[in-house]
Image (cartoon, rainbow, N blue to C red; front, side, top):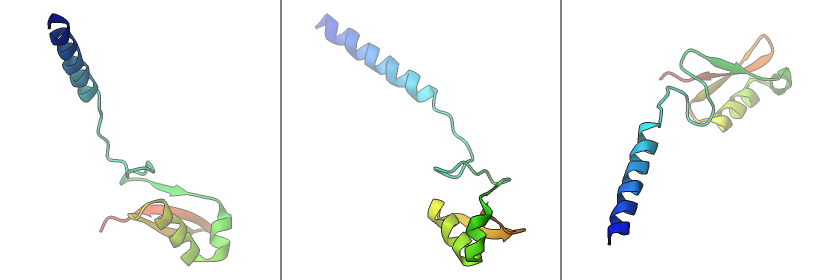
Length: 80
């Protein structure tokens, strides 16, 4: 019985430690673009047209817009 209490206390303390070490950020989930950033990729994407750049970026995340800027596909966070 005494061992069970010790295990329970150890488990609870471990959970509290893990929860307290979690950090939040303003990144777009799964891609790492903050509101102030844009991420640009190879010019090859824009050779297929701006529509393909849009499809490419929305495939990465549904909140990204694709724009060909100087012939390079850039994914920009949609702030709407």
